[in-house]
Image (cartoon, rainbow, N blue to C red):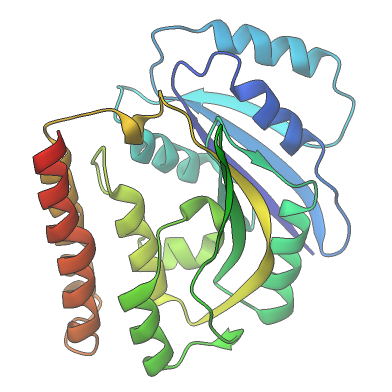
Length: 275
């Protein structure tokens, strides 16, 4: 049996948080999933009207999913909000959902089943990216469920895509390895995900889209910021230090160097040119 904590960073979410929260309040439960808690972490919003909308929704809710609202001490971006959620989470497993996205009604149940059945530290599912012009399937890199070999881990590190919100993470695994989000406002999810792939002993996948990633023009990732390239390079510098600290840099040096070049330096150059 297991339960899940779903962490949602919230900043001036307005009405976008309501459909997201409704999709989570409608989650199916059943063996091995025994409970779900939702942690809404307010990253020092300047507009608290979303809290009134959430309170109105919860006033008529009669289900078993628990909801808590907490906040960061200062506005630090989604990584800081997620770290606050990690401190508060009571679940055996952790999932991260963005405030303007949706999940399938068996999102938690399917991920939990895969985690328990495979004794996995991390589980991944597919997703649908949705925009006004249409939708497309987002797939994680394919791998065999179970123990991660050195060869498989190296291939994953070279080719994975950062879809943080399609992952489920064993909390004990994160705590034991000291995996948190670096204190940055961009690419912090890439660093977190890479650290997980680097340290996980076992992984599993649900090969169907359980998450709906909705493209929003006002989202943080689409806003221009002159510091984004610096944050990106700092994030991958953090990853390199994590690998060295764990004694894994020499083993996966080639894979990590390619990852840092591709997702760090090349994308930092793009960020520098367009911001």
